[in-house]
Image (cartoon, rainbow, N blue to C red):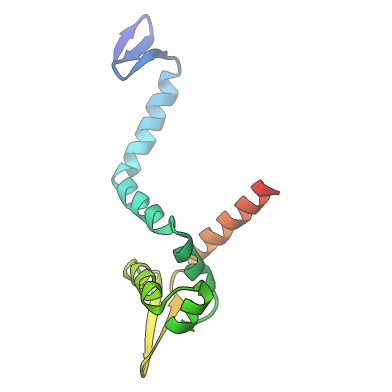
Length: 127
């Protein structure tokens, strides 16, 4: 950045920076968590699928077998199992075998609280 009479210009922006202290403070704040942002983007990428959101909400306070989850979603067992594996690999679901049956349950209360909060926010915005 080049300073000219207390106005900073940048090669990335043709407009002068008028709030230099605020910009510097924000950049410093963002730098603290910059290493986490790619992981956060991956988290949102995984949550950016309505089927996976339905699974998480369906398992909020109950355990269901794969077949019942498939019925809830109106999907095949194979398609449901694929989505469940993605969520389980992230550590958001626990799995329990009972003979040939496989049961899933939500394993992350803070994720559920965030999802419910987001739903509430969306409902308020749409009202």
